[in-house]
Picture (tube, rainbow, N blue to C red):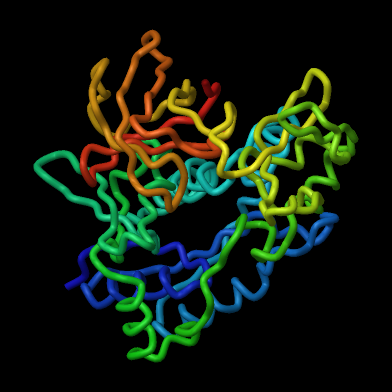
Length: 362
């Protein structure tokens, strides 16, 4: 007897494919779906391998003998993810488009599609645990700490996660690969996607993408003593802590320059060396906006854990309310290369509390 009709977002990767298999094995009526995002042939930028992703997702659906459909979210994605990225860089921020894709597309537009078409729920290949108790639920870090993706869900609205399943939360990546090979999935050995989703490859340079939308605005590169070391093409091409791509030679001790801060008033890029605890490269205080909570809001002065960025180890923080909608956090240990526009996720132990976006660093 079927446990109900469920929609599985098939990306073309092995994780979502194994998720579909596991749910079918559990007697769900599984339907696969692939959403089109930044796959517009008229765009100047054509690096996104959407055709390969779609073919892979279709082959998985055929192999598992499940219904499959393709939906068009191109305009949603352009407006809420790509434009967000471009405008963030335009105003000197370091945005995270994957966070917004989860908030507005995977657990936004796709959830609406699920509801409108009579599905009991939906599932993805995220490495995240969901625990249901009584009439509520909580999200937790996945068992595989190297693949845990709970961070990317920190800005998703809680109501949009209510009917979502995460079949891989209790499994490691190695175990998922083993399942894929055991059942002869056609994409069992396909490599994981890396880098920004719509740029198509980790090797793809985001500078080349931004050049299509943001003009160059050259300025000086200076060191901590005010010496001019070279020129930059525009401050929006750089982020705090960046080492590669500055086009400056290392010093005599083979130390490499990193970006310390950006002076927008004088259009200057300030660089220094990584081992120097200089103001701007390391912070302990940060103000936040766009707060989102999946759990009870923190109390003023409460101690929590936070992931400053994806793959960062959890850090001890102290929560400070500035008013009813704005907050600040204090990192017990100074954090390297935080940047305005990046997202931070909060936890109580392994339990995801929510997240926010850095608006100001001190």
